[in-house]
Image (cartoon, rainbow, N blue to C red; front, side, top):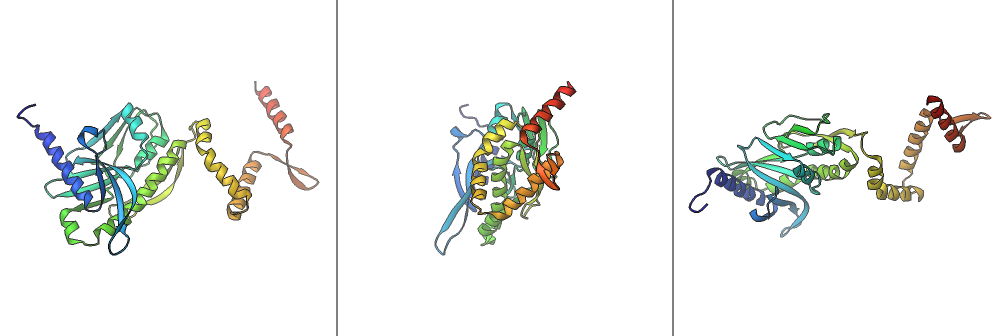
Length: 286
């Protein structure tokens, strides 16, 4: 509109520019132009000291920048599909213009939400809720906390703390690593349960598996990794893993009553006999 500018729009633009400036002081930033912006404001890349004269670039992640006055971010239908298919970790930066402060959040809970139900129709992040969260909600529409910020800083922090770039790198590195791993594993219904506090490294407290995941899709996704593992094991390069897998498979077979005693020795039931026995049980049930 000629001669006019929306106040809320300008306020959002100023918060975004301040957020980009604060991020540029601790990482490499590739800004997404407004004409190309579909929910990502910048691609940030971690840097660390390489020698006296150079930084070295490492992991990258997406950042969406919002004013601290924003309380929720909502994704619906195709937006959820877009969000779930991002191949870099997704961060949300909340900017306080009055104090020139940025609060950087990693959307760790997104992987839990997607792994639990990959077919959701609506995901809403509550940007004011910093509580810990483990998703046990299979509904198509879900509202989740964004969780604690990873780190907060201001222009004053950058000026007064000459080592802040290194501190930023050391703190963000494990968050990005966990998020990248979860992007891969959530496709097969597996996610790590993460907890963290602002300014501290994240902790992986366990792993959650969605038993409702499509088996055929899972087999297709893990096939290259499983083949690589089998090649490593068959070459004898990892005897510890080989022995561990042997004991695990033996326990599963024992639980499923796949062993019989022959002349005092434990033997596997012949596969043909086992198949016939299962078919017989199925027919009896019918």
